[in-house]
Length: 120
Image (cartoon, rainbow, N blue to C red; front, side, top):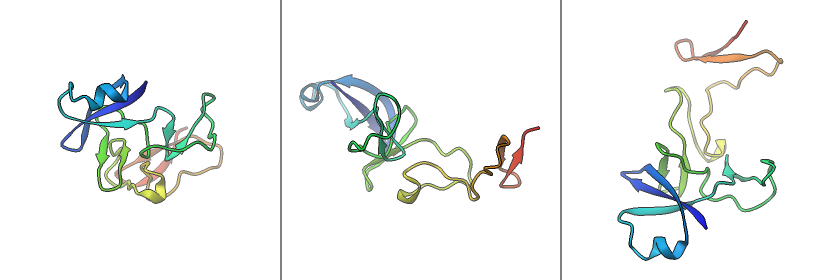
């Protein structure tokens, strides 16, 4: 069994588990694209959720509301903030204009100032 995402106007509207033969039979209307539960950030992960060197499939596991980019044959999540960007260089995950600080404190993104703000 595999996971398949239904695509309507470039958006994922449904994700199901099915046999490829069932999807290919044409019984279900619409466009269905296979997705992998083990792929995130264009990296394949094992059952322990750690990268395992397996073949990644289509950037990320598809979720309802995700975009299917047919040009790059990838799925990616909704944009969290207008200033964030996505590309193959970011492994098909949204990235802020400046990386989050790594000083051990907790931060949240402030879109108004397009910066990280420490949570006290």
